[in-house]
Structure formats: C-alpha cells, structure tokens
Image 1 (cartoon, rainbow, N blue to C red):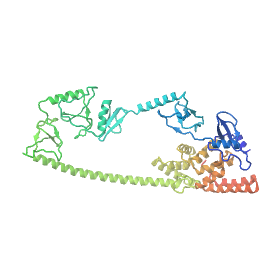
Image 2 (tube, one colour):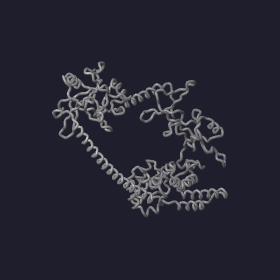
Image 3 (tube, rainbow, N blue to C red):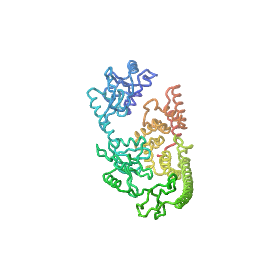
Image 4 (cartoon, rainbow, N blue to C red):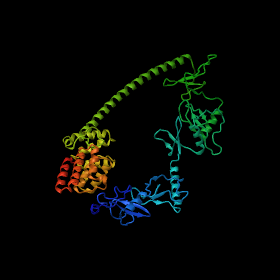
Length: 553
C-alpha cells in the first residue's frame, strides 16, 4: 500500500542498477521491488508500473528472479575513445566488444559493455558486421579532420628552438612573424631544432636556391652600410641579434654585384675586450673610426668612408681608446645609478601593492565575519545566524560587494553578498543564487530552493535534492521538511527523514542533530506501543519545525 500511494502521488518506476536493498519487506516478506526480463537480462525497478522502453507491465520479484539477477553480469558500460585500430569483435567467439549510440548531432559515442546511456536511458546498440564499415569510415574522417586542423603552416624562430603555428603573419605573443614553410625548408628547421646555428658563407659564388624546387637555401643579413652577409641556415645575426631573412632574387643579384666590386667597403667592428685594434708585433693600427653627430664612436676594419654620413674614417689612436674607455666608465656609472633608482621605485611599488593586498584581505575577512553561513562548508570563520545577519545586512552588503569585486573568483564571497542582499533586493539575490547553483556551489541550493517554493514546489524539491547530492546540510534538512509538508516523498532509504537528519548532523548541522533525535524518539515510541497518534506526530514535528531558522523568502 505504501508503494501504491507513491504511485498515486505521481511517482514512477526507476531502474535500480545496484539492486534492491532489501528485495523483500522484513516485516511481511512481501516484495518491495519489481522486475522486467528482456532478452534474458533482468532489470530491477523501485516501483510498480510499466517499462519505460517496451511498455510491458513490471512484475514483483520472486526468490527465483532475485537469484537469477544476482548471477547475471552487471558491468556498467564505460565511454571509450574511438580509434582506427579499435577491436570491435571477440577474436574467438565473434561476440561484439563495442556498443554505441548516435548523438543529436550525428556523432558516435562508444562504450565497452552492453547497457543504457546514463543520461538519456536509451539502450546502447552493439557493433555489427553490417555497420562496422560505416563506423570505421566516420572515425577515419574525424581523425583526418583533426590531423589537418593541427598541422603547422608557419614557423617562428627563437634563440633556443622553433615554434610552429597555423596562421602565417604577425604572432601576437612574440611580436615576430610566423613565416610559411615548405617540405624542403622543414628539413633545415629540423637542423635548427637539433642545435645547429647559421654559419657565415665566405664563398663568393654560393648556391642560393635549391635546383629541384627553386626554394631559397641561404639566408642573409644587411649591414647598416649596405653590405650583405650570407649564411647557410636560418637564425639570428651573432652581433646584432637581427633575424636572418631568406634570400630573394633581388638580394642575390645585389650580393653578386657586391662581391664583384674591386675592393670591399670597410665593415663595422664591434669593439669588445678581445678586439685587437693594434698589431701586437709592430703596433700598427688595425681599426679605423668615425665619431657620429651623437658623439658615439663607430669602429671599422679598413680605411674608407662612413657608409651613412660619408665622413672619412680616421686611424685609431691610444687617445681614442682612452676616450672610449672613459665614456664606458661614465656610462657604467650612469647605469648603476639608473639601476638603483629603478630598484628603489620597484621597492616602493611593492610596498604599495603589499598595502593594497593587506587592505583587500581585511575587506574579505570582514565579509566572512558579517555574512558567512554557519552551515556553509566553504565558510571561513564561525558564520553568522540569519537573525544576526538581518541586523547588519546593509553593512554586510557594502563590505561583501567590495570583497567580491576584489576577489571575483571566490564564489564564497558572492554567496555571502547574495545572502545579505536578499533582505533588500530578493530578485537580485535570486539571480546570484541561480548563477552559484550553475557553478555547483553547494550552500546556494538551499537558498534558491526556498525562493522557488513560492512559485514551483516541484522545482524547489529538485533544487533541494541537488544540494543534498553536493553535501549541503541545509538542503538535507529542507528536503526533510518538504516531506513533512507533503510536497515530496523519499525516493530511497538514503532519502528518508532520519537518513537526511543524521547526514546533516554528521556535517555539523545543530538542528539536524536535534531533528535526528526527535525522529529516533518517534520511531521508538511507535515500535513499543504501536503507531503514534496524529496529535503526537504533529506535536513532535511542530516543535522541530520551529527550531529550523527560516531562509530569506
């Protein structure tokens, strides 16, 4: 009769994947679950009714059905990744090893066992000899699309290796060009990845283009004076750090003209500690220089003229070297001062940031002190009861809004802001609770459920059940109250009032502990002296309901 009343109240049979616990009522021996047999497989349900796929009427279990169900295989189908090499049939028996379903978009989902889809409940279909060819074709086409989409089309050189991309052009992350490449160029990129670096080509008549494909196989760098240097690999210039560029026909013709000139123009010299500007044997100068308009001295390896301004180059002297060294010392001193100023500025900025972080931390702590829910498992601090929160709701709104803006990723602060806001703007608080429920924030489900109760009791019960599934003790106590009010009924032993109260109590819910004790007393009283009178039940649960703090409604 209890099951019939559930059915009359709108309850319908649900599959019991793990069996019925128990199969028979321990007081009467009557069956408390029903079954259906399809293709030799027994499926168990928690209520009388009709099979959701076949429409056959479900039958109450017998001892023989229970024994048969306990011996049949019950592997839960698991989603598996599709691949071209997937094995579809058992090599000895020929039995299918893969089951599938088609999604609404037409894609295939594959499983490793017979069964039903965990969300839609539709039966999974076995792979057959007739459809395996089509399935393999679909998998192959999907793999080809993925491979084509991930294929690199351009490259970016770095000092350590090569980065590949799909879109040629300016790369926003590095600020460098992502250059297109071909198969021939890919071979040289692999050399660069292995650690080989460009070497200067001294041959005056090098091969510049691949005779098989016409692709450039040398790279060039143009000096400020216009001189072109050729290299045998992509990379960066050793003195300037400029990226070497692939040779073009115009550059190749210009290089040919350059090497045919009777004399080469003077080349810039990067003066370092190891540079020999004087011959160690006779003291003759080996460097020439010119002082630019900005006062900087530039050095060259031969006499001639400055390539930009046309100044005649002067032979280097000891005085010039001393001047250069003095300029270097002044520059080093200025760099030290600049570095110190920069360090002082960074220290000042860090102090300011630390002060802001400290202030932000105080705002977050104040929000926790003013608006945290004592039963929220994510709270920081003891929490504030609903009546106490009402007294400081405006201050809690102000502080928690500021904390929420400083720490937007902290769902706890958003929840506490909505909890305080509900006293003044229930609709705005409702929207926040809904967004928190979408983000699976457990404590928000109880607040959302009580607000939905005004308009949609079934939706409110569903929200409470979702909160219970996430371990929210408030939702557990609220779902039990829905039973008392007659808005819902337990769907399993784990959903009875006593089970919900005990679970809430174990999570630290004080009223859940009180309710659990009251429920135990009512059960004990009913067991010793028969059923309790309606007046006794009303008195006990009326006392308990008055103990539960009401939510913002």
